[in-house]
Length: 94
Figure 1: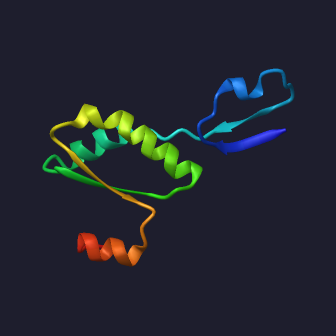
Figure 2 (figure 1 turned 135 degrees about the horizontal axis):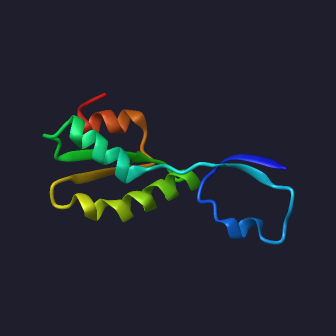
Figure 3 (figure 1 turned 60 degrees about the horizontal axis):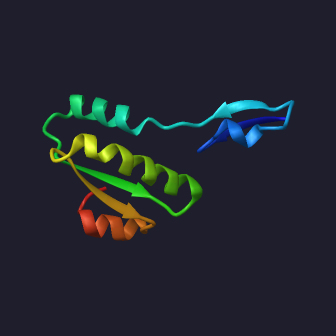
C-alpha cells in the first residue's frame, strides 16, 4: 500500500501493519512566514484563509502554535470558511 499527501501523520498510525510506505504532507508555516517577512520586512498583518476541512483545521492549529514567535510584530487576521466575495468585501483586496 502506498499513500501520499497525508496530513497530520503519526507513525503510530501504521503500528502493527506492514507493507505501507508513502509521502507525508507537512507544511512549514513558521519557515514560510520567516521567509515572507525577510522578503517583505514592513509587513505587520498576515491574512490567513482556511476552511473547515481536516487540512484547514490542521493548518490553523499549526499556525496558532507558530504565531507566538511573531508576536507582537505580526497580527494574524484569520478568515475561516468564508466566501471569496465576503473576503473581497472585508479586506478590500483580491
